[in-house]
Length: 171
Image (cartoon, rainbow, N blue to C red; front, side):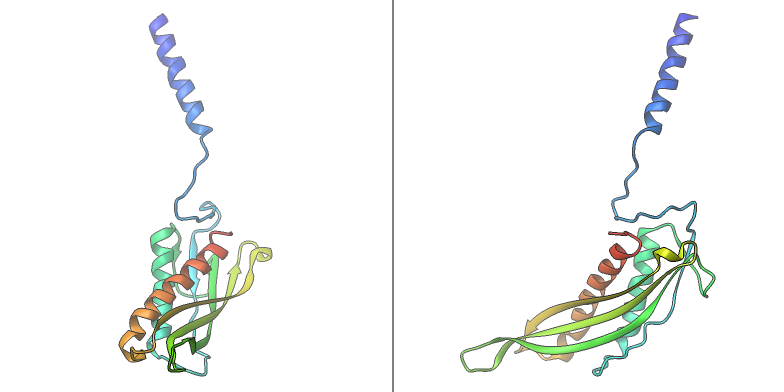
């Protein structure tokens, strides 16, 4: 009988101790999955003066994949989701960065900027209009067409991280 009491006390103590441990996610998401279950994405059309056509689908796919991989939110179509993101790509710009001995640029910077409208249909006070920008430098001896896909992939990853942290991560 005494042994049964000790085992029962240990089980209760363990259960109580486990319930008091705070839970942290390693991806930075601060989502209450009891409240938020779905998210939808609108298109992010390119509104920049310089246009790289694959950029829109590259960015949209990156955002959708990141949310699907790092959260338990279900990605759905339409405006009826608990959370929604939409916006536009506002800037796609090349600018010289470093000048060499011959007075020509030795580095070029590719900058991409996006505007994001984050809509929280469960709590409108948490909705936000945000702007983000990211860039990558490359050698001016390289042609943009040779490095453009890789640079855009890297920049889209950076932008997705920034957007995730500012909205779902609530940083």
